[in-house]
Image (cartoon, rainbow, N blue to C red; front, side):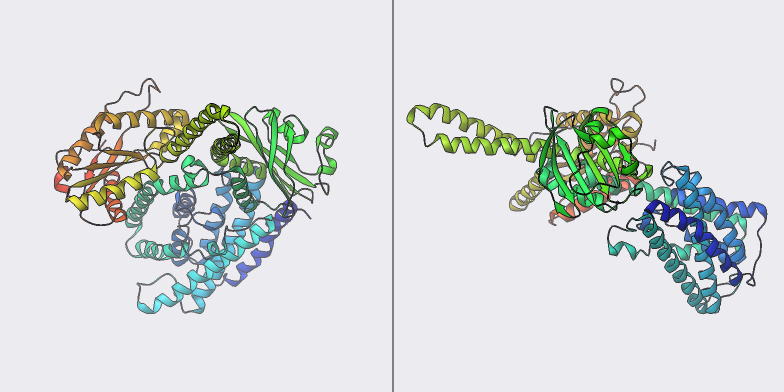
Length: 608
């Protein structure tokens, strides 16, 4: 049976096998809430699934234990199961990403999630009863901790086992590594669920409403503070520039590692179009773990050529039943495939390569797999383009070195030619050196050059007893600019920001782009009050910029964190500046923040 068929059978059979578990808790305490309270519980579950803290295993959301535990301790297992099952049925149809834009997936996940929650709550209720737990939850005393802990652990174990079973039925790994399986994020929210139950039972609905507002504000604060972490992860996966340059062969292996974590496959291919767009160079071809010879094909040949020419992803669920034109175009090396996925890789609005996965069995892949593989390809496209550019420069340099070596052994009449080639080599080396130190978009120093300059300035300041200030600058809500106006507009904002920095700082200052929208400033021979004033002038000038030539509706501000060196290490100084920047963000953004809050009275604008 195919993975698709196994998953469908699993999702349909699972609820039928879980329903008898209700008999184990039918004689338990049950207090059915009023209809409006019932709807409030369902809405609470939907809220945390949509907006909760991202979890590790299976891409789920944590914080679901808050309403689940509260429901169980207030009304007993049967009402809690009813509310959870209703929410589980609704959720996949309200969250397009979770259902992978497929109504079939939505139905399957609604069935499996309903059964999973039923089993979790039954297990939690049985453990709670076995360890002496009481309904409804009485005022907490020390003996109550044991049944509450047993309930939480029972729910967590059942949740994890059923996640593993679901992903096994789908033919996919449940986590990227074994360590990801030991995920206790949900357990951290069990005390919050206990607290919610106590508030409802002993302080009333109004107090619970205030408690819910507090939790919602916590979520908003957490999601805002985690934006930088999400950007860093995104850069690590696919948006780094030449500071992480490498050859295509190295990158191809990394792409394979990325893909095989998400797909079952017997064959993998990664091809890159040459700069002239005439040939497709298959840089990595793995068949059942064995590396096949590298081949170069004409752009229009085979199924790869069809995908490139039409700029369209291709899913062949069953190769034996595929249309005859697809079968004829396929160049088969080894066993005939059963099913395959081929997606184009895009960069700067053009196809630069392809990624393909194949399986010997038919019906191993479906439409949501095609969407997932296309997403992987698009995330990694920038790294592929950078690697191609680096490789071309590196090959050109190697070729020049070889030619120089050959010419040095020739007659004296070739001296002029040799000197010309040497000058070319030196120029290319200077270009490569500059690319390794400079951010290619803004022309500012990159993170590697900034770290070098920071250590250099720390040594100089320590040796001569001079002042040194460090400022970290971050563009506010930059992801929204990219999402709303496009990455091209976002790049223009970054370029203009770099130009503004050059106008506002001295020749001896160091200005660098150290992250996606984060900049670092080193201000030698500058005391903290002066540094704060200079950064505030920069912030105000940025806020006054007119972005109408990019888009009439575009608005942009920045936040600044400033710290003064006090003899500590570079990492500690960076940490203090980062804490000051976080303070500016937390205070409302569009402001300058320093270590001593007394310096901020004259430079902090009113909240906007």
